[in-house]
Image (cartoon, rainbow, N blue to C red; front, top):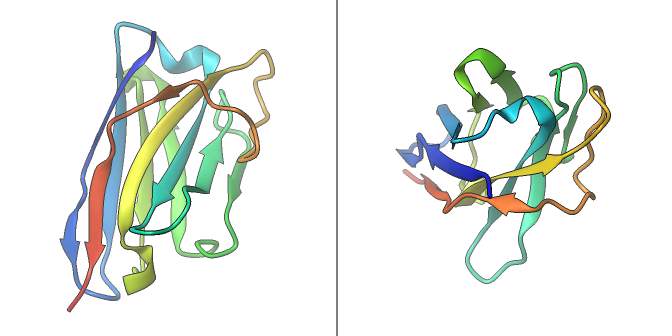
Length: 126
């Protein structure tokens, strides 16, 4: 089973930025599309962004388009979520997840993702 570890969360003021990291251990991420999901208190988990195996395709939730950027460094076995212009409504636990996939250049937030990290808390507040 793929082990995923998120980091980079914290407390930030509205308008600020954070960079989340997702690192895989024991297995290479080369064969996996990666997604970031989040869950706020009292709300359902929602997809935030995903990136294809080769990084050539990305998708974003409408709520974060233009503010968040997903990227990956397969040499470091790491995927990043750069979050800018943060809003209080971005407050949530952010989870990294992976899906093994044959296609190099596809990802979708609606896919079933099989491996999940433990999450990292992001709090946007003044």
